Image (cartoon, rainbow, N blue to C red; front, top):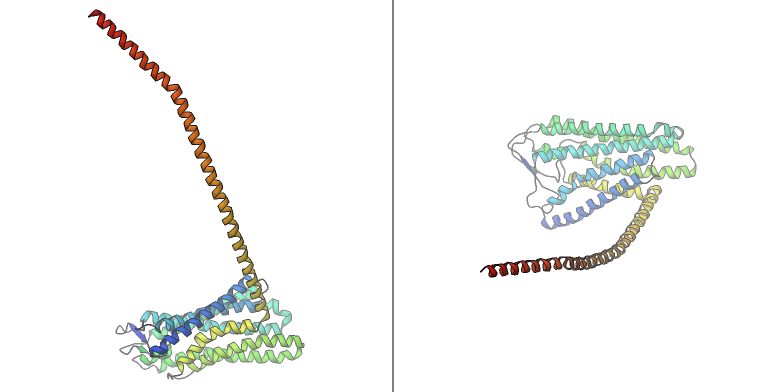
Length: 378
């Protein structure tokens, strides 16, 4: 790291104040919808007992990754839309590079696992439960996390080697290697080749593998019944739409020389914010099981809410009766205490007053007797 540059300035999508307010409102709504949709899928799969197959196991992680992936870029874009000083520190910039590539690569691996799951379910249905066991699915997900960590570590290693001598304005709305290469005061040809061979190769090879798998799946459907073909086509079509929407922009960005185009930012918006937003819609609108599980979850939530409201009302009424009972009890106790005090005081004075009177009478008699003796002597 060159110490002359400690922070960067993010240019953002536009510098027009009017458009920035529109960007703030639009992307804030999109981000909240993205989080809500993916969180709903995560909760539905976690709670529902009918969504326990490997396909929904991977869909659970896809929704989780989508929420995290959009969080790496969207909050910064939303905040900077209303900020006068759109600066990001060097460390925050490197963290954003690592996080965006980590969750982006993890989403690629999850999409590959989902395609592999569909391939086994359609082409090898008799061995499906044996091959795609819970243990195998867990191991595959762990390997995906490890592979994503290796990829993002390689990316951050390349970014940390870039020296920055003066210019610090990034013509983008988040930190990424391609715009950072333009600011580096060195020959970036080799580093760009490494970026293409890393990110570009992962995107391209993964996309080709997915295309081949879906071609094989479609070819094998000719031996299935009409109902089986319809269900398999519905599932695979939704998966293929997600693959095209995600890999198209990624290949456009990471498989070319170190050049930037004005359309790059809009393409990046599409795969960093648009795709995580569309995934919940695609998987819920085209999947009857997920929609049914969401309806059951919604009905269960409404019933629970009604029970809570009834319990609160019951507790409120019971509390009022209990309070009145407590107040009545307190009044009775106070009455008994006062009456008891009166009786005790009466007994006290009835017993003590005669003694005091007797004592005073006795003293008076003794005093008179002594006076008489004294007077007689005198």
